[in-house]
Image 1 (tube, rainbow, N blue to C red):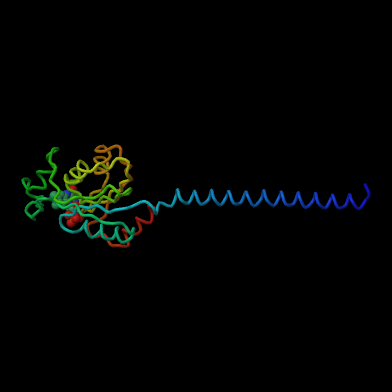
Image 2: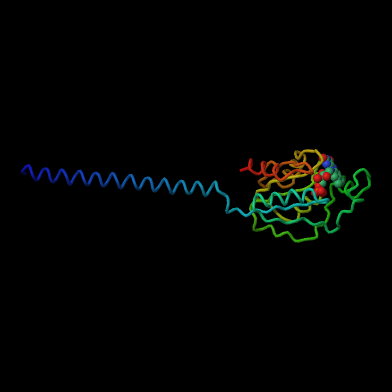
Length: 203
Ligand SMILES: Cc1cc2nc3c(=O)[nH]c(=O)nc-3n(C[C@H](O)[C@H](O)[C@H](O)COP(=O)(O)O)c2cc1C
């Protein structure tokens, strides 16, 4: 073999090796990109359908529910009692008022007037006012009527000051197959900014 042939073969070998290295590197970075986009699909749950489901007797919870709907871009559905609560029903300083009787009765399940089309939603923001430190019984009617097992539920409440932890215990024990996320109490007059700060902290 003369010198010229050796040089040509060497050049061909160098080019082939360079091409192989180039191919390996580009293929690897493509795999990484695919992996990253898969990761972002896992962490970005924008495909998850969300809904705010709320019960409100005097409008405070309804206002906060509206903020949550606006901030999260969720749908919104009200739990409407078949028998609406009058102010006499809600007069908690009267031991015999309807709300107090219901809260004192483990079996009370006030009827819901409307159908709540919940099946297509994966994430539910469940909102209610605190009654005697706990969830109003109509929320348990909701959980009895619709099987939310396997869904993610984030409870919110409004109250004059009582926290949400007793309600969280009630809800977690009531259906242990729901993915309950620790909830949040808002004051009856909570502003949209306060609500937004909490929603952002969830993400
Ligand atoms: C029957 C009843 C019991 C209540 N119990 C409590 C309570 O234990 N702690 C509290 O902080 N607020 C209590 N509240 C106040 C409500 O939680 C508060 O006003 C709430 O924002 C009302 O929401 P709504 O307007 O959506 O019905 C009670 C109100 C009612 C009507």
